Length: 141
Image 1 (cartoon, rainbow, N blue to C red):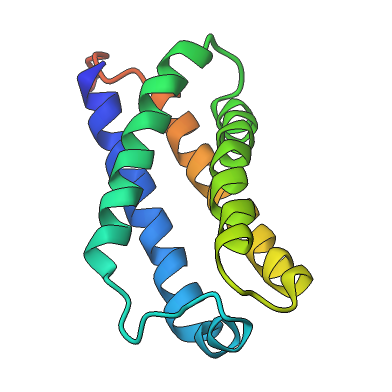
Image 2: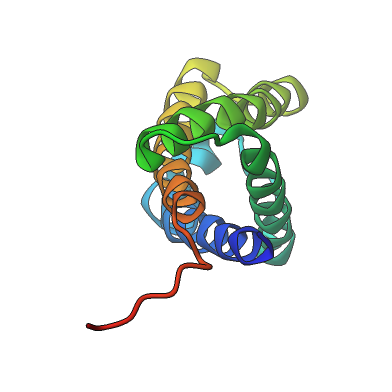
């Protein structure tokens, strides 16, 4: 089981970074600056990476209680969307509550699309990892 936690955490981290870095710091960076979502001149990327690692481990840990069979990708996406809704409520609504972001609707739209993509992709990956039997021994006959 420990392998599944490790692989799931790594998959969550890699996939989230592969989407988050270009989304927030390249593709829509200027938009986020105009909205007021970024107020720091230089983002502190290691803190974002730490948050992603923590989220990834928690997602893997909780998924181990959730998954009881079924199609691994479908189950992973379903769980990813549930887990993502919790993360979204913290990331989206507390951000607009704490920062002077305008218009709020534009921020929520882009943030919603980002997190929907994030948790569909990472949920599918975690589902595949937990659906795989790491203890199975295969031999060529």
